[in-house]
Image 1 (tube, one colour):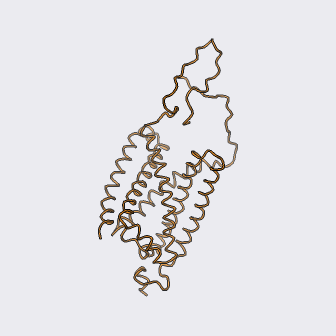
Image 2: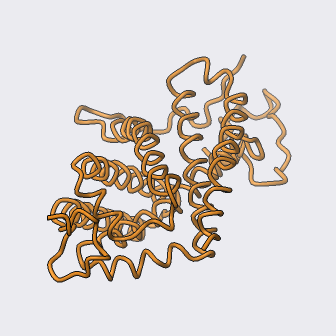
Image 3: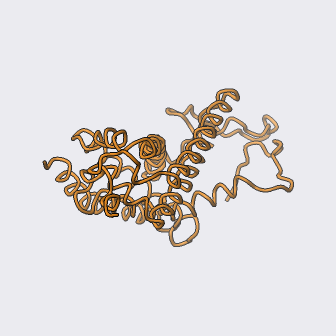
Length: 149
Length: 148
């Protein structure tokens, strides 16, 4: 459990009979065993991309709902998706969705398949490589669409 | 090899009967996740990669797409699976960080309310909208509106 410091709850051994193990005060928040490991960063990124995609989804359902209002209302709002700043935002969105999707598949492979658990580091590299391939396929084409008149 | 148990006599929660909702939530995230990979990348490919991509998006494009039952059901499935997947993820994060009971309850209530409202709104929009509304300029509408 993160945040719980190691060695606070030493079972009360009879004093004098056994020497209690000595604990040095941890330098950093203790108990964070996999701190700094790639597994931690993929966990952090999964959360951050998940929250970002969730809020985009809320907005995206509302903007699409404007088709029920009028063609003019929908076109006015969707028009803002075509300006260059939003175009870059769409690159970030697709990058976030791609990472969340590929990392999610990696989690599933680790959860359900012993091979996946054993080779989780390799799977992490595969996620990064496939993510780059996805962006190489998407980003130039999308930016040409966004910046061409 | 020694295993140290921090507090061996600490009381622990023992589940007794009933539906294990956390387990089904865990399964839902994985099953819907796989489906969403297909649904979302299909959605992104058709809307952003084919033709002029984002530049081609307007009422006529969406109207044409949503008058096809295939895309209606694609988008309905996408709406329900994605929003519930996202809401359940937000619930997990709320439980992790919002330790104050009242704050936790308010945040989860807001997530639940937004989810229910948007599921109903989105589903109604997909199935009740008119691709050829009366009185709209023909150049804003799908071409089939003026065909007959």
